[in-house]
Length: 367
Image (cartoon, rainbow, N blue to C red; front, side, top):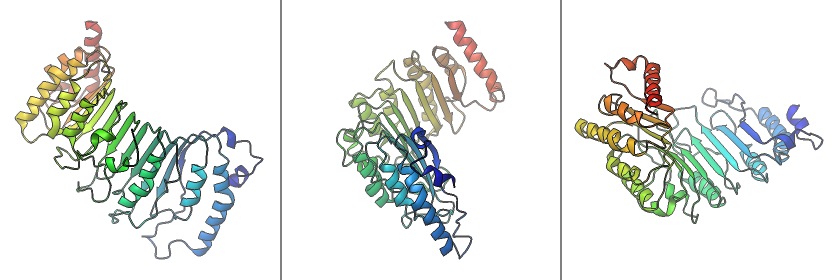
């Protein structure tokens, strides 16, 4: 009854809605638990609600700016997807779209046989976020994501998340590369780019990355040397096109440590957030050497601008909290957030709040 009343022309609520935080439909539909899935009566009832009330309701949200849309392929029927996408994409002020695609049946390794939320009708977006629990199908990347990007010349934020964070495999089988997603776009204007297990090979990086880029977050398999993840070329390209990031958070770039350091030392005064996660290099001596260089050169180089610092390593070593990090952090007078791994025998390991208090005291006393 609520949706029915809101879908009428007499409703005054619609004009005030600017954000929908979670558009989803919980029908209890779990086909792997029962052979009788969705009954014919249920389908008819759902269609009636959808086409008579829900789609018209969404179409009337003329001031809607942001939508977070969640679709579970194995719990929710796909019959409503096109109607919802058409209703949302017709809204004149909609600029921010986030789509989460879930698959709770972990025996399903691929989504290519499922119908997924359409994106090809969306245009003029400022931000597009796609989070997928399984490898994003190639056809979906090209038909939906690439089309939406091409129709949004003023896109400033793109966030794409493939799975694998908790999986044993690190093979990307179907998701296309960043360059392919921008193949129909001239002069990307991205300011924020977030990629989780999204391929970015070397070819075409300089045409894909925007010189306006300010925030970059990338996660790949640890110590990745796979050609799909061209870390060295990425940092070289950032340096060549003059990108000065204010935020950089990375995981898996260990094979390109020198290139990352060379990039970070190429500019100063603007880096505010720096995060290097789950560091593990092939040789402990190389890992310690990189850690010492980081604390001796990189952090002091950005001491005037750093506000947040997040460093974690798989094993104990020079990256962990100790005399060098303390000296480096003490120079960062604007630092207000940090998280650094501690050695097992370090007393701050069990009292991290004491570490924060001590560092803050040192920062204040050095001013």
